[in-house]
Amino acid sequence: MADEIFENTRLAEIYDLFDPDRSDLEAYEWMVNEFRACSVLDIGCGTGTLACRLADKGIEVIGLDPALWLKRNMVLIVSDGSMVLHWTFHH
Image 1 (cartoon, rainbow, N blue to C red):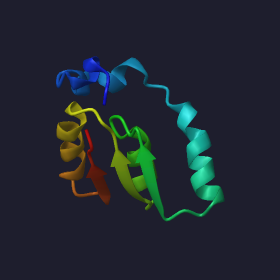
Image 2 (tube, rainbow, N blue to C red):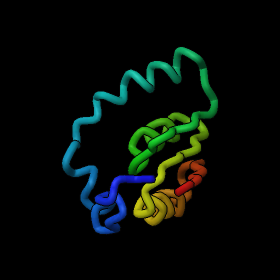
Image 3 (cartoon, one colour):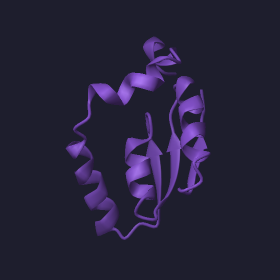
């Protein structure tokens, strides 16, 4: 179950603006490269920042997150059509 604040659908529109420096994700990208992964399960995918970075490199990503507001946000990313992303939501 997600924290109550993550059930607010308006948060999805501004969430990533609060932390634009995502150099913390470089370690995960390094691991994907090191293991030569062709698919990744992103548990706690949030707004999909890591998933999109990996998809840009041709990695198939399955995102898993309990927050309901993310579903709407992820549909917008998938509908772009430029990435192969599969989003699964369990709550």
